[in-house]
Amino acid sequence: MRAYVGWVAGAAAAVLVAGGAITYAVAEDGGGGSSNSAVPAASSADAGFARDMAVHHQQAVEMSYIVRDRTKNAEVRRLAYDIAQTQANQRGMLLGWLDLWGLPKVSADPPMTWMGMGDMASGEDGALMPGMATNSELTKLNSLSGKAAEVFFLQLMTDHHKGGIHMAEGCVDKCRVGVEKRLAQGMVDAQQSEIQLMADMLKERGAKARS
Image 1 (cartoon, rainbow, N blue to C red):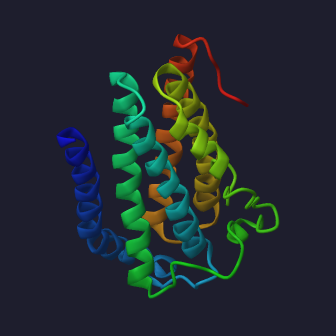
Image 2: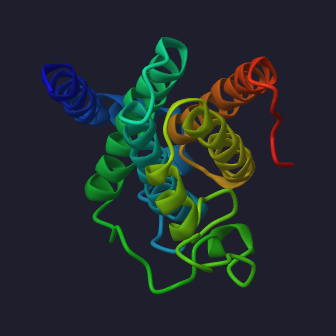
């Protein structure tokens, strides 16, 4: 229990640190030109990406916490810890930007409308965006343990990262706020690296990604 509490506290601290850096990052970026200094519109790619990726990241954090309690394997637990810390931190930044811009964190438009994909977001069984696990898959992950939990987590997170990369690439292409575009590119780079790592971890367990 002590380790679990420490892990949760660490993730929470990461969000607080991110929140403290938000004002500085946006202020620093504001001098880069009129397109950066203007507050994005509620329907902009900047706002849409911030809203959707915050939701996407929240599920990654949730899955990481689940597998942390379903296996004793140090390698998988370390990966899950890194994902939870990183994505909780980034989620805090995204939500903080929406606060600074005075924009709602929830939109009446379907997810990914800002990418021109609002009619393609599934929503089936809780999977609101591409790559997201369904409610049934989360229930299954909660029911597994040991190697089976490790393999299923790695498969789910690989799909999740692929969906996240697609969204982040959309922001790199469409977002106007420089600091947000840089965050999105950082997500692409980091998650591509983690996909390769997870492919190696799956291979070690006699498994592979689902797609």
